[in-house]
Image (cartoon, rainbow, N blue to C red; front, side, top):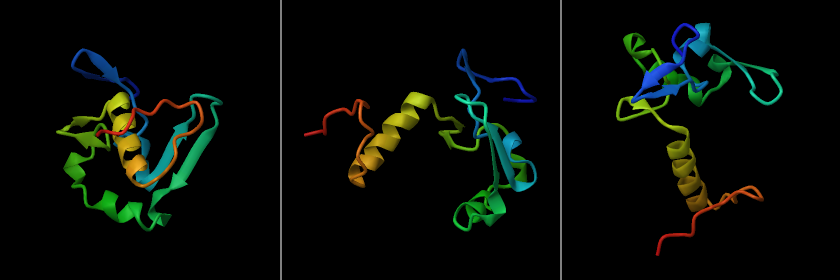
Length: 104
């Protein structure tokens, strides 16, 4: 979202929560879609994540935080990539979650 509006991308509207405008002053704020509960994380306290965030030049801190090929990663692509990595790390899928069969 840019100024509270979804970001247009290839005819779609991308409004993922992991955007630079959601971490003003290093504090990540998000309201969950299911319950509306507010999540607040002080990112400088996260020893592994904060140094990585600091490597991004200030002029590049706009729009989506996680990008592939310069564009926000779409939900289905993220899920696919996550499951591939989780499978290799032997992390089981939650019950009722479809997982594609392993490649032969």
